[in-house]
Length: 231
Image (cartoon, rainbow, N blue to C red; front, side, top):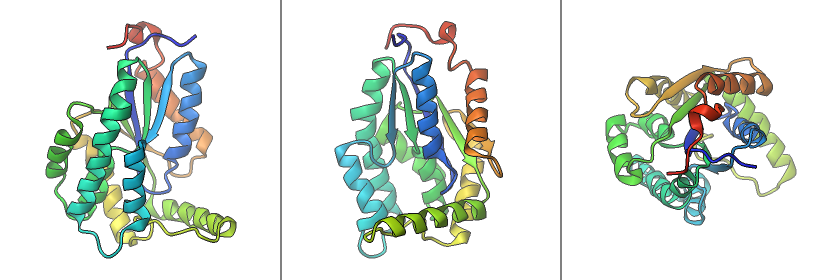
């Protein structure tokens, strides 16, 4: 039987290839096994409208997209995700596990030249008070992440003849280094808790153990700390 708990919102983020999607899936199993009800989602995406925006941002855009246009599309997807998925789940006492969020825009659109303070200002309009209870950044050297992405692309291309390159994956190494630096700077100014977790050279299981230990330390699995009626 699922516990009746106060809803909590956890985001995993980081550079391309850091393994956050795998870790989200592993965490969902941990929470479910411990009696929590969860919702797994992603940004951009997570809703019908959001998935259309995701497709446009990652694959379908024609021509060069201005960073401001890019940013506002991300925020539009988040606004829909907050209203349609995150807030209702939190009100029902569920644990929301999200693959990327506003933290990604601070890093990616920040690397594209848009000031992080302005990104946060736009985010406050888009999502209101729907900020994560915790954001975990899976830090990985850019070169290691790019190697992982390269392997994955080769595997996808082998399996699917219509596979397409992600607009963000294909950007320069210099750009991705700026993205990493943007993630590392988040704890200095982000308006919600951020923890940077070094993952270089670790297996997926080792990273999972570190994330679980971090959440244990912060009492995310502690019934005494979390039990309450939703809302």
